[in-house]
Length: 290
Ligand code: PAF
Image (tube, rainbow, N blue to C red; front, side, top):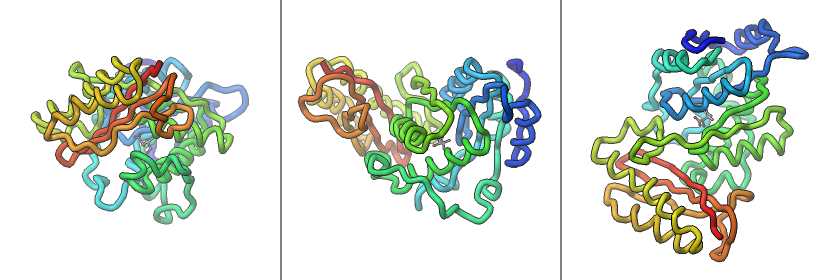
């Protein structure tokens, strides 16, 4: 379908399935369906996912659902931005075909489902340590969305590196049909990774938050000198910012997502999370430790 055609918004599971069946998308030799799962409040990072989806398939479905299962007590579920009208307008500029925007009642008609997909040990580390149950809730809704839409490809952003690792593991471990496509992080000119939560940052906080991407870039530039040098380079930027309260800074093995040994050689990924004011920000970068 054409860019600048307003996508059709569907809010029921039956409605979406019927619409996809009408395109032939759920039967036999059929168009290639690409799903981009989101929680809305779309920014240029999300639009990059949809542009990639457009290249990969015939029918691009963007889901917009603020999933209560992946928010813990005291997190920002109630205040998470809900901007459906603006999101649909933005999606029209990048060629999304269908927007699936169910209510909580549609997704969880009997309240939070008692059946969960569990993320396993890696789901309890890093973001999972700070947000217990987050990844189980995330994988549960991603499973539901895949079952509802029946896509050939699911598109995720590299910014949520642990999420990407866990979705890849789930797709493989549970023999889900779609393949995953991972799109690079989109950054502001300053280096700050785009996030729906950036809108909560005051100007001074936004400036301070740049220490995260600056630290990652510094780490990548000295990665040839080893893990300790990379960590030290990143700390130098992040620790210098009093407004940035570091939660974790860790170098992980991309195969296992476990912290690397001090003498690790080869590809790795540095993960960082911090609170800037009350806003939790995450970022990551590839490191070549050779
Ligand atoms: O990355 C997100 O926005 C969410 O975790 C996702 C994948 C849409 C599931 O709710």
